Image (cartoon, rainbow, N blue to C red; front, side, top):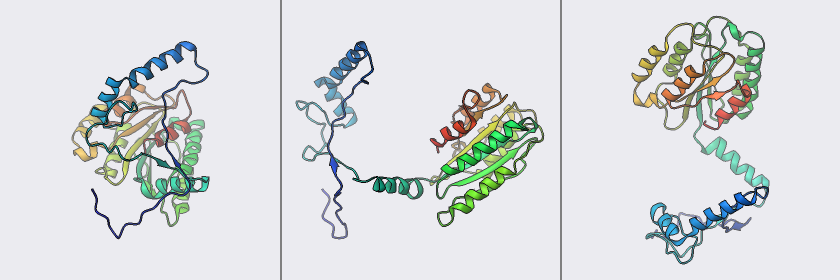
Length: 284
């Protein structure tokens, strides 16, 4: 038992406290067969033998009174969830988590701006990136790395809490300056992104987002990149690549990159480019 400490302040929530049991249930619109299946599953999970197994293996408290909690679980206290009574408090908590408490992201956006991106495709990329800046959080580091026959530029911006607008405006300005030219050096550019990032920082979520509208036609080959990646230190290999399938890009090629690096492929051929960028945010 912890000893009483004079330097600790006990805070008791005043807005409200909820104690609840969340049952497994089906939607009201489901059929009788589905409701019967859910009921049978619920009955099976609440069976004493199953509850005993759950509490012993996972240290969760049983929901059936006849089953004793596993050894070591405190049976004298109720587990309750305090909740705020106003939206402003909830919004403040979420804002504090997103911008102060959670690990900040550190991302390199490797962007295909080869000649095939000229016109509508480049316009869609610019629009999607500009829209994405509304999601960037305080302390986030964003690097834009457009490429064609090679990497064209490397521009890094940090959304600093003291002046977030400056970082966001910088990203938008670089986005507007993107132009299409050259061939498609996917693997050479990915290598440059890994060299830029170095080892994954334990205090940040570090990743690479690759957007391309075509197959690799210039520079390093897939085999060259595989060899490069396998030669990286273990810490650098933990940086995943999230490729976006767009335009005429090769799904097998991009799936291999995602599988090799521990990332995931996102499809903007079937959906939208801005939707793919937004979905990747869930991994950052």
